[in-house]
Image (cartoon, rainbow, N blue to C red; front, side, top):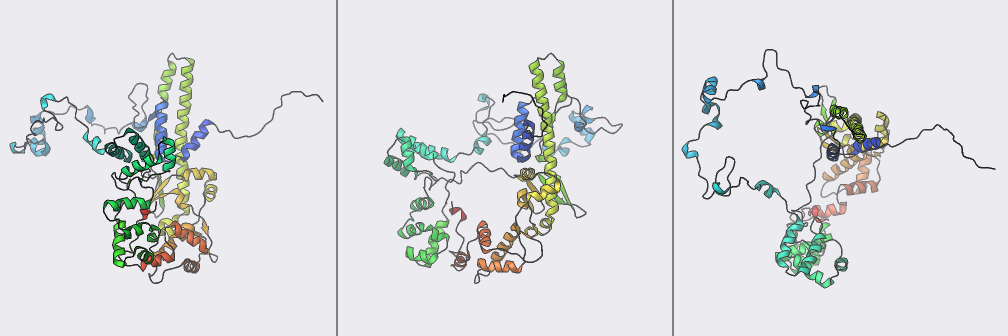
Amino acid sequence: MALSAKLVMRQGQSMVMTPQLLQAIKLLQLPNIELAAYIENELERNPLLERAEDFNPSEPGNEPSALFEGPTPPEGEADWASQELETDVAGLAQNLGTELGNAFESDRAPAPAEFCAPPEGHGLSATSWSGVASGGSDGLTPDLEAYAAAQISLGDHLARQAAIVLADPADMMIARALIDALDEAGYLTGSLGDLADRLGAPLARLETVLARLQQLEPTGVFARNLAECLSLQLIERNRFDPAMQALVANLPLLAKRDHAALRRLCGVDDEDLADMIAEIRRLEPKPGRPFGAPPEQLATADVFVALAPDNSWRIELNNEALPRVLVNESYAANVKRGRTSEADRLFLTTNLQNANWLTKSLEQRARTILKVASEIVRRQDGFFLEGVVGLRPLNLKTVADAIGMHESTVSRVTSNKYIHTPRGLFEMKYFFSTSIASNGVGEAHSAESVRFKIKQMIDAEDPSDVLSDDVIVARLKVADIVIARRTVAKYRDSLRIPSSVDRRREKMAPPVAAGSFRNSLTL
């Protein structure tokens, strides 16, 4: 049988992910901060895109837009900007009917006693004091506000101190490597042995340099664990006696409030143990915290939900968080009319298409967010009226089917998007929770509302009658909520609530020592 090549036409359907479609999907899931950064990059790259607030209709090539036109003065009234303003002092006083000092208190000439002579060797300029005599000033003043606002990093702070205590360049190189190995809390990460192999230095020398660095400020840096961090601070305070050493060596017992075991290990009575615990609680478990990480960006609401006069819910987009860009088509037309090469025409055409698609994608993004938010509010109206206990089970597919979109689209819309409600600011994902079956024929319960009820039970429990997980299961069953014991334990752990044994030990402990151990000690 001979093989031959031939052309065959077939009709079929396939989905092609064009660059424009990929861009629209990407914009849909971006939070406000990242979207603003993306728009900034597009504004720099595409000459046909402009910010709405920067658009000037009076510039050549820009057609005036009704969006930017100001209100027209009433008939018979001239525009104030075209009037000739009175600048003569006597004329102003006559028009006002009083002296300028009475009308404008800040412009009143000060009395001689109100003048203050500048310090010796300093000149007084029209805006500020200068640090040199008036005759030698070059007109430039230091930006003291920027200098004071500059935040020094933990690494720079330690490097300056290390340069003072270490004279050998090799030791300084080791110190720099150890500083780079610190985390944000000031703890030394990684192994000294691995670092020694990487630097080609003896392990003993690294340990010697580390011991010197552990004496730097803030006290506790370069510790390899919490116990070492607390020990360094106690040594500096001259409080690291044998009893305190035993307490630091048994921090897990302290976290569980097992005071009986701690008294036995430390060889102290209740009063001494309470003093030691109070001393531990005054220490800083994360010495690098004051320098900290870069400040976190505050969440910005994408949608506002408010109660309307007719007791319905009014849902609005946050216009302040929506980027507004315009396509300057007039500029593109003017350039095309000139003498341009084929490459220039292709460049303009491509950028015009991209600009138009971007504006359409932003508009589609806003409409989709509003549609999804409206459906969430409609289905979770109980939350806005009753709080967390009013949350209902909800999943992405339910919302997607209701608004006629794909489940993946709803997932992208609700990621890193926030709703501002009368009860606070919540992420859209918060309103989606799994279903907990009821005991009878009633509606299912939201997992978040069940978690809230468990917290309410534990907060209201009697110190002499601490609720176990089995008791909580039984009480929830009475409230028409069917839940397993392991689920109660999982929800309790997610709320960072200790077990019934630990809670009973904490509540029965002496008042001074019963204060909850600082959560930040758990690294």
